[in-house]
Image (cartoon, rainbow, N blue to C red; front, top):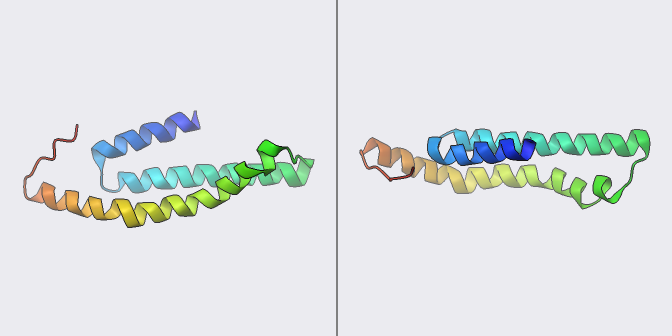
Length: 96
């Protein structure tokens, strides 16, 4: 369900723009970091070192949130500023 939720928020962010992209990036980052905490807890408390618990999934869950937030600030934010200028000038981009 978390995948579906983040997917829906991502699609909605194309319609609502602005800070909605930031909310989507933060939701995904919090979700992944929460998963990482759960996996680390399983490893330390229950000695669960299964491949899908402590392998590449854990590395990805820790590495991806900074990447997501960095991409949002360097790639999406400039487009948000352009969209705001177009909206002020009355230009309809025809999105949705």
